[in-house]
Image (cartoon, rainbow, N blue to C red; front, side, top):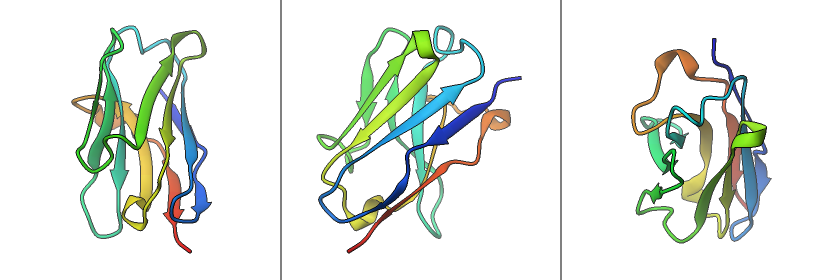
Length: 116
């Protein structure tokens, strides 16, 4: 059974940066594209960044130019580098398969709060 563990969230001031990590229990990145999803308070979960098996990336318009997704197959880890953070980036961040998530893979996520 696949387990995904997200980490790296926290409280950051507007304009700051964070790097999120997602560690997978198995070598799934060779089989699945992966993505980072965000759920802001009172909203539905949305896909903000994704990476295909061959390394192609895609971003939501709201984060384009500020967020960078990358993967390390040897470590079974996907990263999300976030820069120029804004209050609207606040939410719980999850990783999962992309563009279609696997419902059984949702983890606890990692909380990001952007506030002064």
